[in-house]
Length: 392
Image (spheres, rainbow, N blue to C red):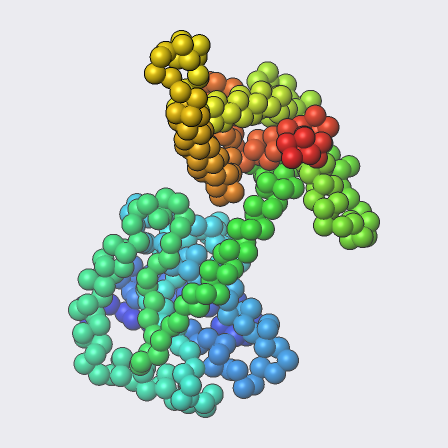
């Protein structure tokens, strides 16, 4: 059919270095050769699992090839997901120094072919041959062409503008053969994300290694506060925590001394502990005041009541004992509520949300840590061992 669009089927594996490294440049070179916007490229990527029985000692390397290839493919497959068409840097033709970017995804559809449990390695080639024959030389090709435009529109709808703007999400221009299932290892992915978030949190909030706030020059200066790994490994857990806290505090002081902007974030942070101590004392006074309020029901025995002819010592003592018991019960209930809030962290959350200056009272995570370290480590801090002993 002269009016029919050209369709090119490309078969490759992403297990070896050649296939996993060449299938993307090959797609764009093929598009250059075709020079036809209506031409369609369909890729068939055979995953490393299909070669499980022959990879031997290079198993990890083969799987790494496949993982990297799929990541690179997805990076480029996001092109065409929404209009206006974006542009990505990709110098796929070393013969042409000026063609260094692409505006179209490499494959219109990319079939991901795995090895089901009922297949052996020899069956994969035969299965692909059968699938190719059915796709090209049977009526199914007409059905595919008829559905292609609708399929493309639906896949674009599945990738909204908000995801493209954030460079987030995944495209949906993929398929597979037969009844194979692409399984998302949900627990493994969640575990990976949790570990990565924890590692990022440690770097940012424990080691103060946040590229958004710390320049490379300042990071270089931080090396003076580094602890020798061998020495650090011999410390107790408590001593390790204190050395890390000391390094964090030293970094804050260094940043505050270098900041030329009055009232900048590091200067504010350096001044926060003293201000927070005053607010902590006020918060404790407020708790004491609330506890005293619970005794409002205890009535004083005045001289006028004693001179009243109806007054009797027994009745007054009974009433006083009842009022004291009720007040004690209220105090214990209120005190337990406060202790529960401290145990769950709610009390500290509320306090740290108002421990800063009145114009910006809420403390960020860096400021919270700096204040709490001061509370515990300063000799006159409200959470220092001496202060805790006095409370006991």
